[in-house]
Image: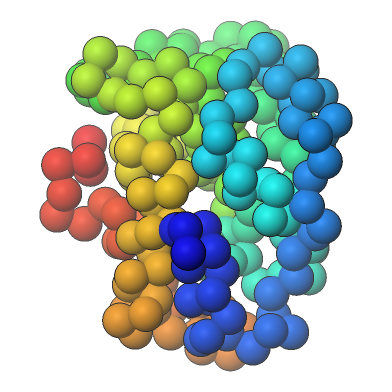
Length: 195
């Protein structure tokens, strides 16, 4: 069983299935459309993830620790929105922070948003990392901070780390919410990847 399947199984084991509402899988034409719109390569683990489900239904609890996976159409919409903010509002796109893993941009058109907090924060796939980064790494974009965080080297690594912590009981469901927003601790706490 791969890390994406393990992640989904781990979620089901701790969560009432009625709280998790996933959309039907993406078709090949949707991947082609995404690639055309963004002008970016779509990596195999991204395809594998979205071949399982096309983001979450609006009634889902937010399976990334209360944050929601975006539907492909919302991936495109968020990506376009971020580019328009960058252009229209003339945001200074260079941050003061330097990282060997992530380029020091406020926003980069090579970042593919896949998860949203619903309040402007995004988890993205970085398709153009800095010199020590890895293409396809998972990063955290906080719209109101200059810091950018490297969460994991890939979608598979990230969901694998969350699965392990779900199985160990690190996260609990309280009511209809997870105890730890965004599961960031699974891949970031105390690790060199946290930059």
